[in-house]
Length: 449
Ligand code: GAP
Image 1 (tube, rainbow, N blue to C red):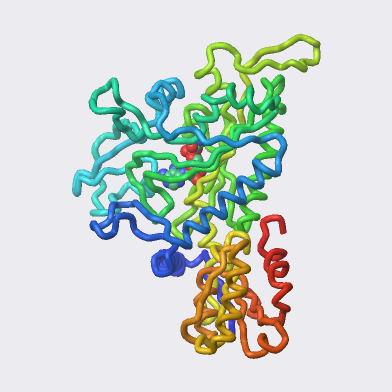
Image 2: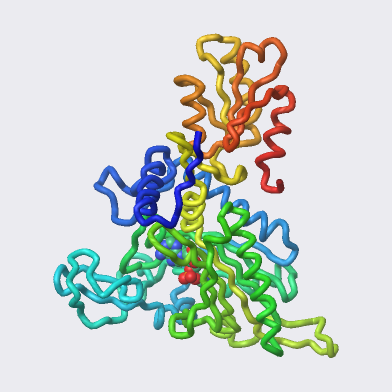
């Protein structure tokens, strides 16, 4: 069979690819339209059983890589609704704005900066109202009275939790600068023009690190750390299976940078609907800590001159979107091999690490042995069970959701306690002793491999 990786260069196949991915996501339970039984809610998506596994695997990989494996980063889970003063101090109430324009033909509203041409994408008219500032903070009210005093915001970035809790983390973790605080969590933005499936939504999840460094004495003091993180972010994209050729570093010009940043690199990915920001890296200077702490929050007890020096550490911030990671991973992994769809996910990201099949389901000995293997393996790994249809169909079905290994229990198993293990990408099969299966699977799907 001829292997055809859908090429990202051809316009038709690109929109085709997007449709195929959306359809696969719905059909197999990766991503569903949100609130569908009530007619849905525009641009809201729910992650189904397989999507939830994939997301969790991404987050686990990230947490393991940056929190567990590093001595200089600790984790945090701050509240989503914070004191509204946080957002006043951070500058978000005043400046977290998009430029809203309205089409004079169909009255649809758009974010001017995200428009790809001067034409309304809905009606084609070229006349718009003058742009006006629209604050994208998601407002809510705390308690029973809905007035200005009870206004609160759903956080638009997880970052502020790391700044506001900086001293408490410092006191309890006893870390010294340079060190980082990492957080995974939901963020909310009242985007004017969400869209492109899970790419831009109003509710999404971020994985962020605020990496605190001493006050730079020369430019290279922060630039070197910035470069280390730039390389690290490329290494991460490789780890999740993204071809580095599909990523371009874009240095955001000053006029487009967020209010807190002195330098920003957007990691642009070739999505099927165009090249867009996947992740970001920013030098936030001491902007945030200075906004929240009138007194320097850090005291260096090992200052070289022997004096205790207090200061506001500076911050390098690498930030990753979980939902955009899911989408980019699916775009990279989606492959067609004849009429077979194979999701070539990294094994440690795959929703199921293996599937167990009895060759025939009406033979109690075979079905019983298969169940035994399934029960043993799923104590440690996410394992699928399938006893429907024929083996060929089961392979296809597991390939489509990226399961790296399929284990078949057959007549020979009853004689010599071996099973067939078939690998997703090569479709090669080998005979493995049942007792060796946990090690066989474990050594191939673990995050450390
Ligand atoms: N703390 C810095 C910050 O929030 P950002 O570039 O605005 O920076 C970081 O967001 C990442 O969050 C983006 O690179 C993207 O992956 C993700 N993201 C931002 N807005 C999003 C949205 N509306 N929908 C989905 N993901 C989004």
